Image 1 (tube, rainbow, N blue to C red):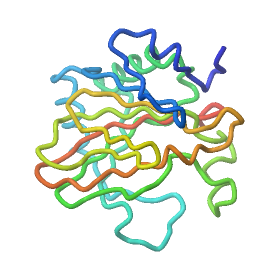
Image 2 (cartoon, rainbow, N blue to C red; image 1 turned 180 degrees about the vertical axis):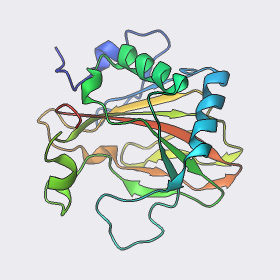
Image 3 (cartoon, helix red, strand yellow; image 1 turned 135 degrees about the horizontal axis):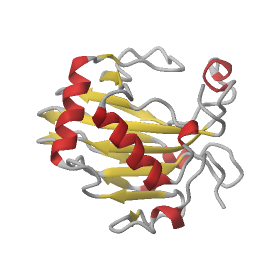
Length: 210
């Protein structure tokens, strides 16, 4: 039985229309049309109201490593609350373990180079970002629009590239069975070639978020 900060492939695949990415190296699922068009449109509006340049937890000296914009979404907004409730039902994870929902916006040429969502225990910012809530467990990302060209999410270690299509949910376990970070979750938010890309990201932690 998964802990309060965990989900499982069996639980996620119990929902209609959920597909598992066929790789022994990663626990990953895709759910097309998780969100409706209207819900996506409202979330895009909220992201545009309060976006700012994205930042890195462990800065690596590359100013072009992450060039998107970010928005911390407020649960007081009805569209955000509705999404939080949907994710709680879908993931089976105690919402106390969830970070604040975050939106990202990518213009033409913007990207987030290869990275993992889990934190390096030997990194300089480990205590700052993981001292209270622990490591990230699962990531769930939702594309809010279908990008005209580019903007795919490429998982090079498992040979999988996910195309951004409106309403599609992508979820993966950031850790291996022993609890350590899974390097096979390394992924690249590839450059947008035409149009604009909007996504929502929800991260969960080992311990309650605070």
